[in-house]
Amino acid sequence: MDGGHNQEGFSLLELFLVVGIGAIFLLAGLATYRLVYTDATVNDTLEVVYGVQSQVKKIYANVNGYPDASMIPTLVSTTVFPDSVHIDPGGPTVFHPFGGEMDIVGHENFFTIELYDMRPGECLKVTQSFDVKVVGDDYRYVEVESITFDDITGVTMADLAAACDSAEIVDVVFAFN
Image (cartoon, rainbow, N blue to C red; front, top):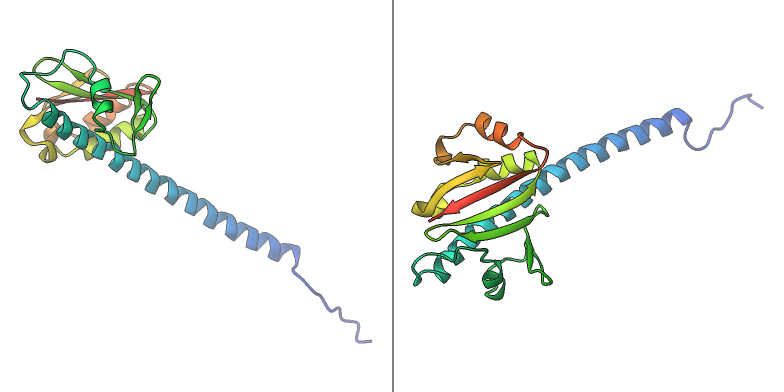
């Protein structure tokens, strides 16, 4: 006998070290996933806004103005909405990619795309990512919780953040001619 021990397996310290490193990687992965998911949902939401805006213009091109009411029933029946929009046929109620309801409302000579129940961070990312050049001269204004931004290109990040942080859940309205 040489008095030594033949140790097999891992020590408790080694096990804690491996589990700790694994937990760090897991947390980093979850944080990255959340950022990627939010960015993808922002893109989906803007695609909905741009696509619906374009389709409404086409549908009402030969009509003098827009109906002074919700256009959801008409737009649902003409399959305007992409797959990223959930439509509850019982309403019909339409839900934007972040999960809140949305409405498209005519106001005689312009219409609005209204996104309800957005969290402040979602509001900020969607409004700061909105590109007026995509919709061109049809852009009228963006409104966040009754704060209207006529010229979205000249709005600072601080202005958008203040509007988006004005409530726990906010509504965002895009208006087009």
